[in-house]
Amino acid sequence: MKNKIPYGRQEVVQADIDAVTKVLRSDFLTQGDVVPQFEIAISDKCNARYGIAVNSATSALHIACLALGVQKGDEVWTSPNSFVASANCAIYCGANVDFVDIDLETYNISIKKLREKLASAAIIGKLPKVVIPVHFSGQSCDMFEIYQLSKQYGFKILEDASHGIGGSYMGKKIGSCEFSDITVFSFHPVKIITTGEGGMAVTNDENLNHSMRLFRSHGISSSKEEMFSRPNSEIWNYQQICLGFNYRMTDIQAALGLSQLNRIDEIVKTRNALAEKYNDMFSSLNIVTPKIELSCHSSFHLYVIQLCFEKIKATQREIFDRLHKAGIMVNLHYIPIYLQPYYSSLGFNRGYCENAEYYYSRTLSIPIYPGLTQAQQTRVIDEITKAIK
Ligand SMILES: *Cc1c(COP(=O)(O)O)cnc(C)c1O
Image 1: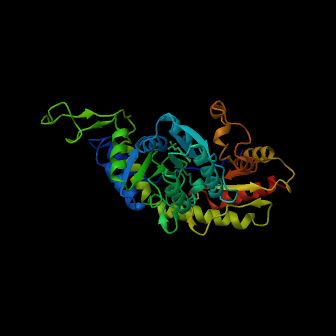
Image 2: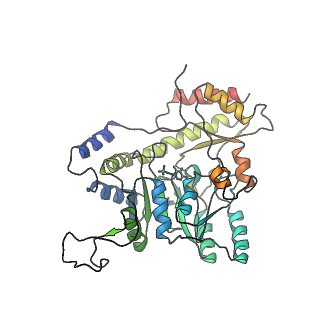
């Protein structure tokens, strides 16, 4: 049996291990000064004013929704072609989730569909409070257009850039929040850089920053201005002023993230080089390769191939099975969120977003990560060529 090649994998080097070890030998495993260092480093890297480190992107999405005031009865819209967390965060706040179908070239939210859906929602008075565009595979959505629509219809924008750190849009880093209120990153091991589990919200808004920090840590404040009803002369004084959570990142994780961040440009470059090689090798096969808009530089978290079943005899399942048998652990990103049993139970049916379903029935995510060797990539290409014959 040949070695298995996963679709994604972290890259941990000696410098990462040394950085983590240093924290393990220090006084503070959590609530030390490495987390703030990591927050500053990430926000600097993507040109945002504030960074709030948390224990996952899911937590970041949750506190972002809370800070944006999402509550019971509100509408929140996102892409069906995403991980369930992009939608769950709104449900945590008691809101209703709805889905905007995708564009079949970029696999991101379709601006045309968004525009149409907003126009109809305006008529029935069900406009969203927040729209969560997802930068699928590391390519930014058309944020300028979404921003224009947000001004017209009065919604907030929360970018789910779990795939997207290291990418850019119109020459601006993803995370600069030029066209949004908050952007969220994930540091899960399959993502661009990792902290094991971890995430971060970035924003340019001081109030959102403050409010997300409160929600991250139990809703507890120790700032004089916020405390009431007890003498604030007591130096140990702190007060819980709202209902928050323990979503904190540890300094152990932050040390790993900081060390990984040193290599992010190199990592994104390697991912792009791997993508280019795939583009070249697949150009003569019955495969549609990812389309990257001129305004975008993708971090290539995922490399998705679309199989032209009009010309291929095998089914998607057969190709998936053949590749897995050959040790090429391709994956499928994503099952449209609303087809998950939980979302079906909320009333969503098959056919709701036809592009997302069409996409889902024709694509596979194939291995792409910094440690993928040339020999392994050649093996992936050979096996895919064979599997679709
Ligand atoms: C991975 C991912 C998340 C969740 O990230 P965690 O850090 O695992 O919580 C959310 N949204 C998208 C699009 C993701 O890919």
